Length: 440
Image (tube, rainbow, N blue to C red; front, top):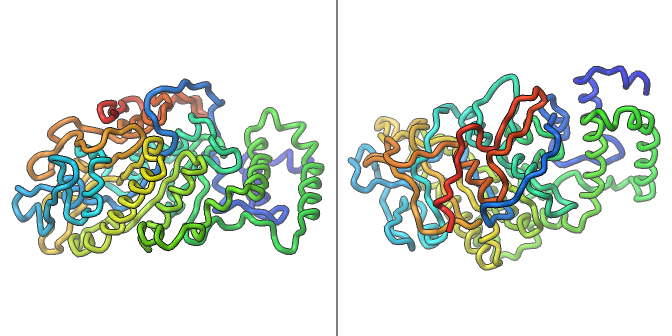
């Protein structure tokens, strides 16, 4: 134990990550190593005030790759062919709101949605673009900023004591996660919703009595170390919390929320068969049990080539799952308390690259969608010009949008929290302002 006390900070983190993954026959789904990364320090807990929106939960659907806005939420029926292509514009249930024809099911739910057609960013590469839209900050080598989900988890009281407040589905390893916040605000990563939550069951060869004995032994072995460092070292507290949270999750009846087999065939058919569709269904199940923020990712929108053929394949997946989700939440009385977001890192070039029938990266103008959580449906905020090339009215940035999520959740978007280096940060960065006009 004395040798462990002499370990430097990074070596100690490595030890704790290894211990958390394999000790006692219990592991946490995903990689526990990231919970003890150098970025996982946090500011001290803050007292925050409620106020703002009606949302209790967020389902954040991220279209990775840069979803085209002209073919989805901001079609331009009067634009020349070299901008419009074969995309048709269809009417919706909301007067005056039009969508691209790939979103035919969502058209029947348009009275529930608000379209933000004036998103703009300066980040035109995938990694920095995703990072900026999720954190409100540009990517830096010296720090990892908390994602919007981590901020909500940090500022909103936990609703279910046995389930994590933040879950990601299909997001991979490049998600900013908790950034410099403590590990308790990190998401629980689920790789495949169909497979459920992995590695949270006691090993078959370990009986309950043996498991409890091993837990007691760990506490005994760590007693001296804990007494010396527990109060002053956040990583030590986090190390203990990994085991406590894992055991709590293992014993929770709410683990069944991750089992999609509990849903009948009709529900599965409504959402669709794609892995993203199952992730959206999982998000609904988690919302029912009080999980605050669920981030579900659908990739494949980097359509430099064959944009329109790919749209015919990709967009119906989003259209079906999103439409089913809105209907499902409404039918269960959860839409008013659940903010549904469709986001992406940037748009695609309005002018088609004719030789490839594709659209390139375009951060200058793109669209987002909001529904539920106090949002007034059937409306459009902001607009682009006649070809979708420039924001013509009410520009909205990533910080503005994240501030809007905070507003919907009733948390202060402008509350300042300090990083380990004592630098100030906010959910909406310095400039972000919530789009309060969207709320009814």
